[in-house]
Length: 247
Image 1: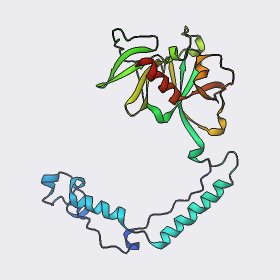
Image 2 (image 1 turned 60 degrees about the vertical axis):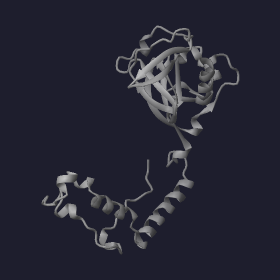
Image 3 (image 1 turned 180 degrees about the vertical axis):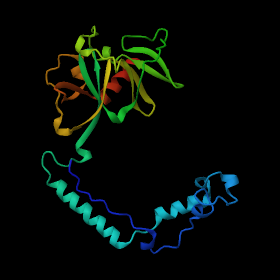
Image 4 (image 1 turned 45 degrees about the vertical axis):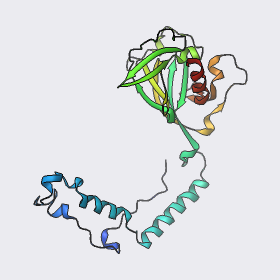
């Protein structure tokens, strides 16, 4: 991808109309002769209030007009080039969507990365008496946090399969995905995780009009990845349904 931004050197302190910086860490601190009496207390200069104050002053200092003008010209040029860019040129981040792609049985599915909490190896599932159904599997403790574990396979109405040869994956075996926002988090086992990928919004096609399977009822769009159809799931509808099926 061609870049429209040139590297502009950051001006040194001599170009700023600012007071001289007290860089005592270079003289008597850890990068100097270590004769500063405060080192016995703070151990390292980065823990000293003088070092912190100097850092704040560097961040708050004013850049010279020439430096600001140079960056303004560069960013203006990049914006102009981007506005007229065609296929294969610079793409704005707002025009793309990052997803995690995984597999359940024969179906390859995707969820937006912004709801992904983590991907982990399988944890023991602790069933809850009189509360278990085909969707709610039980509770899982992940590093001290108790989370609800559900069967996305059953919610979507997908059939379990015996792994055929082309699905065998000894490098990336079964995983559990933790997804959700804030306190509304869910864990569900998957047969395989392919990773996270970014697609242009134009690559997503509308979901089928004729709904024949539960998985398509939760499909927000369809995208092609490595020649395969990927159902991009509607996470809001998915979590809304889970909340009503489990509680």
